[in-house]
Length: 433
Image 1: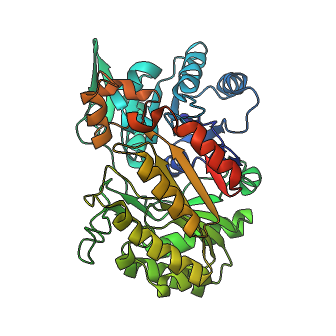
Image 2 (image 1 turned 180 degrees about the vertical axis):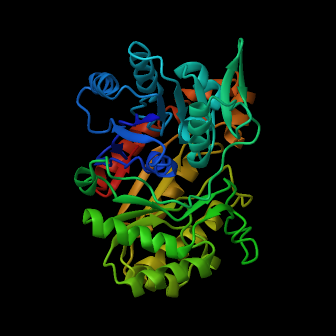
């Protein structure tokens, strides 16, 4: 079977000033799960395309695929100041493909998995897969080739009459196979953004906080923790095959579990790959000490990203007390010579002029390489902010969240944008988003 995989993400602006073009690593993992002895595989990445619809039409006509998979990375760019909805691009791609071929079109990816029923209804593919789609898409391809039914596959989304069916159990993967990168423009990605992505862990979307963390629960937040040997081997292969030394480890909390993080760093040091890498660090003092900062630095880490304090997901009501863990971890990074950025929300539920001033004073008290000031909270389904948006009438139901919807506390809504624009103008290392 001839299979065409298309990455439709074209958003490349990060924090309003920076260019960051993320490699479609999820689609590369899907491609890696397909049996090359059974299927012929081609990948189309639209990130660098100057005419994405023409490029799509050209490859479909030339390749004549029997099955087409489309990865939808983002619902939008999550910017309140310049909101850009991403789904119309994928819908246009699907419509152009339909005008050329009757090959089945299957949609998936991170954005699709957030609201699979709504995304399916808008983009209108033939099938969808919610969740990590590597193994499931490979099974789907085999079954379609054999003419076998596939509606029992985990995470499958399909239409039955006027109803869109979503299999309750979403697809999941342990990512046992390396990504297929041959058909991506690795030379261009080498110059783009934070570096080539390598997956280390994937979370269960319920991460510990400074108040809830303990060593016993430190590993419970993860549904996938890749073996350290596999991560190091993948980094080594990327360097040997593509000359890539700049890496972004996909990991919302690299330092949790702390023993695993230290072991990974030690393995990277011993492998002597001389990588330059970035990742996300959880600002939890119990899971961050001088040793891990030193190991990360020795292993080649050049920058970590930390989330600022939140007003809607922390049981502590004292804003100064909530600054404590982030301040402590920030100082550890400064003492260890590890650059860090802080991404801080403003206008979240409960925000007041006093809390805004406290957050700004806190950012001034540290020395981050960059501070990203994010206005409003992008409302996501199943979150406390979504429930608040429903109660206050900001949305009628969560299906509306396939489009960019932002919550901004009424007490600051009228002045927060102008105020933060002025603050960012006075601080060259602050980006407003």
